Length: 206
Image (cartoon, rainbow, N blue to C red; front, side, top):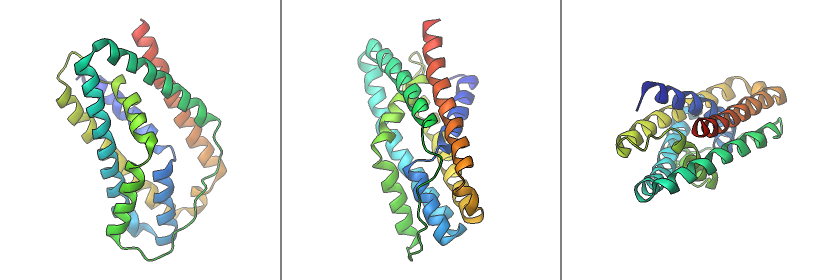
């Protein structure tokens, strides 16, 4: 894997992780109600959930790559289209986070498990990884080393993102509910998804 490919993966992952979804809503709800102390357990749960979903996705992608190069290429084309679709959907999304502060007493271990469960059971997670990851895989290189690098990178970014959201939500509650801020995040994420899908199609067509 080239350094340029890894940097592109880091940049795309970082932008996409910022997009509010079910996991981020859970993180924000705990932080709004319980403060910054929830950051570590919920961020750990999110990271473990992403690790689980990403591993399942990568195993499926690896099986496709091993069975048929043509099928793998077809999945990359479908994946690129799916990224563009998600980008357009984000652009048309609402500008407010529908989240309620959680004030009930919950142990750190339970918060971690809750965050893991919400992340790993989100059906969009595995579908997204199947669409997203093949865009950065090189079929001519060994699969497992690439998988290890991508997973380690994404899980680290996922933890940092969830931790950051928890800290910001606990200290800047107005920002967490600001329609303008959420609209900017959605449009930035939508633009990134459309660009990623378009670039994937363009590079394969060139």
